[in-house]
Image 1 (cartoon, rainbow, N blue to C red):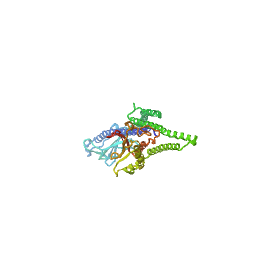
Image 2: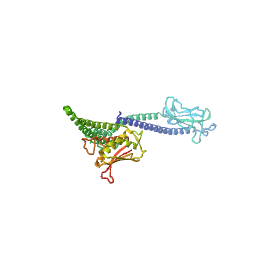
Image 3: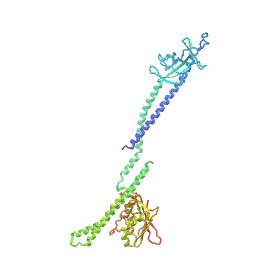
Image 4: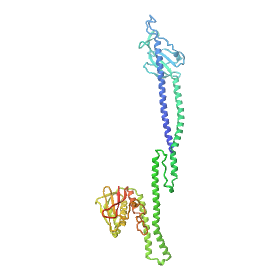
Length: 468
């Protein structure tokens, strides 16, 4: 897996390179445009001089010839020295050459039309020049006539300036940008690495703090002092996770201790009776055998309840079955009916005949069955258990609970918890309510318990509510 540092460097360096390339390209073309504009200004100045000097002689200065302006050679230092980089040539309108500057040194400029635009060309020896063509004139009229071969013709002057110095400057600029870009990339990579090393330091510190947390130190929490704002939510969520781990770990410890306590008594009873039977087989009677059978049955109930609880916690939520509420309550009360009749407890159902819920029929049976079994055993004798429901509360089971206190509600769904805390001889494992809550959680429901004051009764009413 790639590290955060490597991933950020692989993202930032190409981004820096692209920005540098875009900036360098912009600088290159801006510099090129600036140089071309400067050269165009030089060409216009030289072109003006050429147009004026080639038409300086007029018919008035040469009377009797019958001709207009006569072609005159341009005498400027820029055009006289070969290889100076400044060139001109004069052509007829048909493209015939009339004269060219000595600086061309035998090379030729191509004829062009005076369209007013400058263009880049390459001479015979490979030299790049920028040139522009203009009609020949005397500066006072819009055009003139160039004399050649004994007659007067219209002329076109072509002026060019070498681009070699500009090309060298642009090449130097490119080399400079490449070198500075390479140096900048190396420096950027170094700075990014240092910045990331410093920025990721809180994560390394956090990692060391988490590594020090063991099952014996689950109460430790990661400090948020001095942490960057971006990491604080992660640390807060991690501390909340540790809270849940600590709570679950302590719950499992209590569960292990309670399970050992629950199984210790029937195991000890069974072992004692079996040892007595082995030592004195003639004295073994039916009563002792019955006690062994009851102890084994109690252990079996505990194991079965544990398996049932594990299956409920591992079952995925389902909502593909439609279950009739009234039929569900009546069917769940049947296993409790014998105990309830012995204790004089009556069931009152206040549910519409067509009321339904969705979910798993097996989980709903376990959920309601365990709640009703709890009521049939722990409600006071000759009391009643009422079952109702509405749009907000799917099912509400209420029974008197004189022994339940408000602080007991927090532990009521813990495994092996009972209000009387008297475990020996009890026929119930203390897993009914945890199983009921596990079933509700598996179906995405909420099972809560509350104490309500009752009118005319001294004992408060214990209410279990199942909501979506």
